[in-house]
Image (cartoon, rainbow, N blue to C red; front, side, top):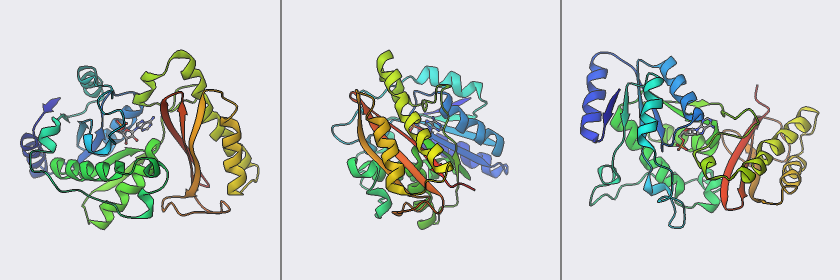
Length: 283
Ligand code: AMP
């Protein structure tokens, strides 16, 4: 597996692969890789000739009070995992390689889709994501890009700017990978104490309750949201950041679930903010 730290060598590799007629799949990550990330690698491996993973904790998507400095960094372990999945190359730049002196260009998805859910509490987050993903797509000359449903709003935002900017990349959404107990895998799970880990099960359990109710015929959005909130509130160390439901993938408000819908939650377990979601009404 090749390890690239500069834009130039990554682009040169990607261009060589293109000249050989190979298709390129990109899996952007921030590292501290777990089984959830590996499901993206496997999807890319199955669909593309060449798989490029990026490992980059992107400073522009973190707000000033967020966990950029504390975000887990484990590059050596990450490389072992990527190599075991047959990834061809990993791009692991320094922030100064991605944002050199004088850098001042940003991709701003200026619509309602970036202002709700995670965008409401994290005003610059999606600008940072859209900027770095656009750069990564250009650097790796990706034909296919792979993202997890775990960050469903991110998938919506990426699809939007790929379409708006006519980028020649096909976006793939990979289902949420969970532990056997239902907890969505996340790099931030390493922050959880054993007690918090147990409490964090309330996220997936509350969504499951809503899914059962939906499948039994409950289509009213407020009722479904209340089922989730009531369930989360039974856990003393959990506090709700948001419980929301929008049509998917356009993220429009709904009163009844009469088409595909995203039921998404963000919950703090003590100080650790976790997200989870389910898609209802999928065909
Ligand atoms: P991150 O390193 O957290 O930025 O995540 C990189 C990519 O992996 C994103 O597209 C995430 O949605 C995806 N991902 C993270 N956790 C999971 C999971 N549990 N299941 C599926 N995809 C995931």
